[in-house]
Image 1 (cartoon, helix red, strand yellow):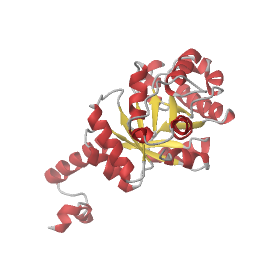
Image 2 (image 1 turned 90 degrees about the vertical axis):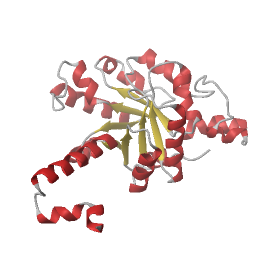
Image 3 (image 1 turned 90 degrees about the horizontal axis):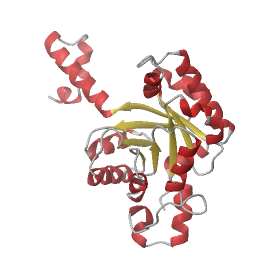
Image 4 (image 1 turned 180 degrees about the horizontal axis):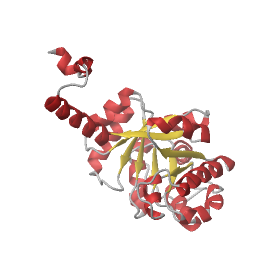
Length: 270
């Protein structure tokens, strides 16, 4: 089984940068992978791409030696394991609410002896049945990551018990939904969010799990100092939206500085 770049770097104590992809085009994944992102976050919770699109995006990342993380929708075990069968490097399960919830996810997504994940082995992650069956089960447990997203106040009551479970790799703090859950939507500097972010990373490190979150570049150093090794720092839609907006503004008002003309590669080539 293909080795996970994310797990390799995290286990070596290194930091990982991730980029979120919303658009349904494998070329977006390939461009971000070529730029140097370690991991491409493919979202099925809010977007729901066709499975063939997801497969092509995973292939695009693999062509550049990069990992893919699929945030799955909350659903049946098939929703969780299909991305892994397509050879995604890992999955993130949103809105883990308590200890029982976490245990159920592990049971559905890990093979024996950790869980009871449904077995096929005839898809991309198993080399289309070309490899040794027992090696496949072992490697899937060791080289594919499972992330629990903590984005509600409720799981904080069970967070230490959750972190002690075998069978998952990372606690990922999601500040967006957490802000709504505490009645302060969008207030990312709210004290309760700061406290929760600190608690998640402390508990993760205490029990040998990795910690991940999202944040702007201006917060990366701060979060890494806290102990967050995995940080998602951008998204294709944000980049494209800002680029288009800047072009229209520049067209209407003129560039802010003369040097700005050279920032557009294609304009410079004319």
